[in-house]
Length: 173
Image 1 (cartoon, rainbow, N blue to C red):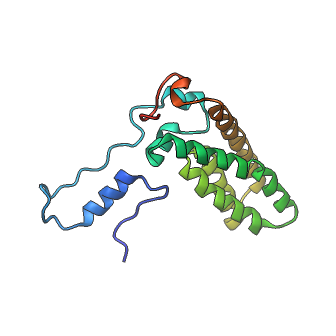
Image 2: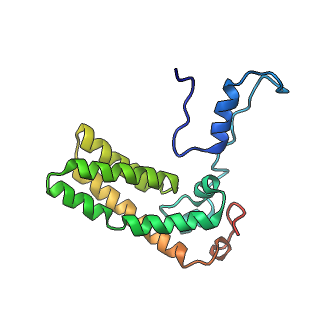
Image 3: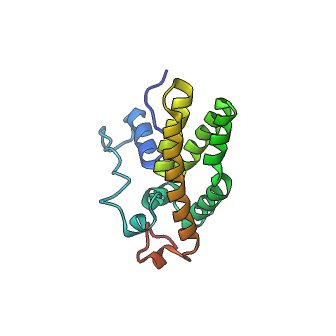
């Protein structure tokens, strides 16, 4: 059976906590395992506010290093820049399953890159296609969230390093 659950994208301290909670207390100094600290810290950084649509602090927490995080943000932008249009075309062709598959794929990729609004609306599109609801409204909201995130990814790609935004985040290089 299943004793616990850790949602994707996996937050390493939460995973560690979940595993420790179920291990026998043998060899541990304490039988109580403290819950993991909030991964967000005290508040949004100035970088987060300069790059709407990307939760940089959360992304760096998951990716640990700036270089691969930037690389995969750029790859996301290249791969999914036209995804809202693709969804609309699929829906116009009465191909809801293709639109749902694309939305599901984007939901996972966006979550892993801390593109939270993109992930939220991609998930909503997927859910409405599978279970019913106003898909056009969700696709429009997805397209808006995507546009904001893509603009921030472009802005980030033109910034040589986090410090150039006025602050280093998460000890980036």
